[in-house]
Image (cartoon, rainbow, N blue to C red):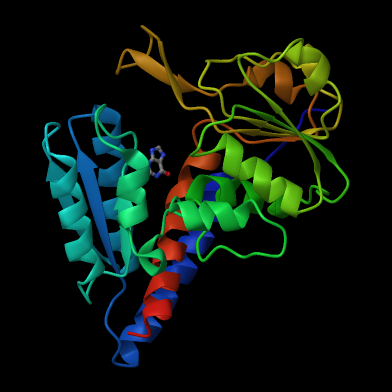
Length: 292
Ligand code: GUN
């Protein structure tokens, strides 16, 4: 039987509608709209596309969003000075510095400058550190990993006691999603570029999270029958039959894997929409934390 499709677009839409309703309830009570500031340093075209989508989603939810674009040669002190200004701006509840930063900037120092209460991306070292420790609760959890967890829950996947394999160990997805899975009582194996015999490890997985950025890397015969597969990859591959000249594929060979898995996310329409929905939800939470 082919895998059940986990429709991230529909699940994300419900979260966005819920945020929108709560924002309008705030306004009706005389509270100000939640405010998100985004910061892009440099000219990464993908970053610009992602940030544009975030602003559009904010607008649709009634969240104020203010974009800051700095040139790639902006000195460290100037990036940090902008963040300090945003930390002190009462209209701004959340600050998102789009990653990656240009080479030469100290990413950890930049992220550490963001006020903990405005760290809607959850990348401040203290928030990530709390995520990594038992009995500690971060104020914010990074958007893509928390979106992955929501998709697992909504698909009815049993996480407690499951064998979960995470492909990729990035700061943005692989590592934080591994921590969230451990926190949900899964047994987690992280695979990366130095891992030996990745197919053998994936065959043990009840849950597979693919976040390596290699188009259609995971093959159907690596999958344990009935496993839940969450594909975080968004890769462009040439396609002359498409108007744009390319199509988007995930890190998973969808045709092969969906014939074996129990449930799977599509690309596009799986994890991508969840990232934005969770960011909106975190921004609303930040406004509540500010008490304004
Ligand atoms: N770059 C890729 N994904 C993300 C994200 O979720 N947040 C930020 N800040 N940068 C990213």
